[in-house]
Length: 152
Image (cartoon, rainbow, N blue to C red):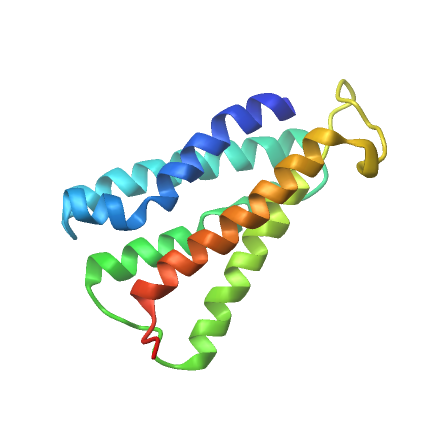
């Protein structure tokens, strides 16, 4: 999968996944919400998997790390439990977001022979998408954490 095709398909999927409070508000914590979100998660995972598979920079099995934080959030909302009362689990959840950023940054690097392999400092697409990925992860983690954790 070419890098621009990956960006054009992954960005809308992950933006939809980041609308957790909106999706929960519209669909409630119901089986319908879980079905819709599960479909989005599977498609997003498939897009990342395909990019990692064709890019050759990271084993495609690591693509699951790109949807792990979203899956944890939606499953927690569906079961209506606040499982992250212990700081250890909160740290693990934060590390899952770091893994998300790492996998996405590797997926955004050029990997195919037909892609531009300029230095990363001159790769404007990578730089812009890296900034947006880090901002996305930070803001989505903050939004989800307010509903998952007991923040005092």
